[in-house]
Length: 254
Image (cartoon, rainbow, N blue to C red; front, side, top):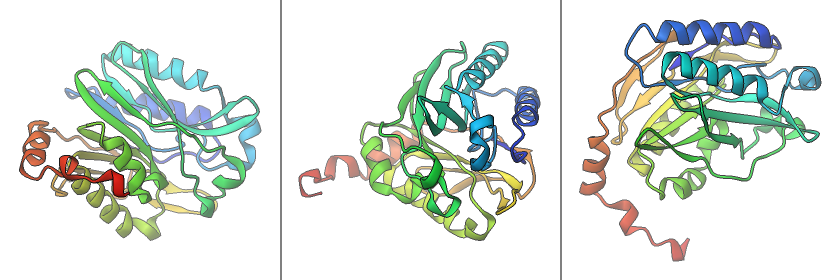
């Protein structure tokens, strides 16, 4: 997990620091690197006409090259993307061969940070496979909609990746919501927040790795840092075998 201090409205600085973070992370044995939300621009929404990545091409080329160079999977957090006259908050996922395996436009826009005024909402799910591991991705405000995550979790992902710019004032809810999403979906949650500040908000980090029983395996502090955790995916099978909530669902009633 690359917990970064995103530079407001400065894509060049942010691409540079992501590259440095990935290089630093690869001093260890790493299978997957996860980045935070809107890391290319921060929430400089009133400047997306000059800052947003055109169809995500700069970001895709950048992440693909690093993934190939280091033979690592990258859950690319999300970036501000311009496409067809609209702006999107988009997650790009590339595998260790540098191939794009998923792109997801954030479905739930956060009005308190004016996303609903600028960002176009996505409409598609985000379940994908990294190597032989089924996973899914969500972005920040999405975690307040358990029905959205459950709809996708019913397809069996073992890991839920979350990228966020979650303000410090609401960090207690960040932890509780993520623990609940892990428990109810019987999956690991790997959630990366940012640190630092922009003109309107402060961000306190606390990136988390949570096991399928809701126990916190790793938690970052309030400064920029890399945090590593090892997931025993057999735990997912074990927990789902003990309490088969997906078999016991009655979706015809809801």
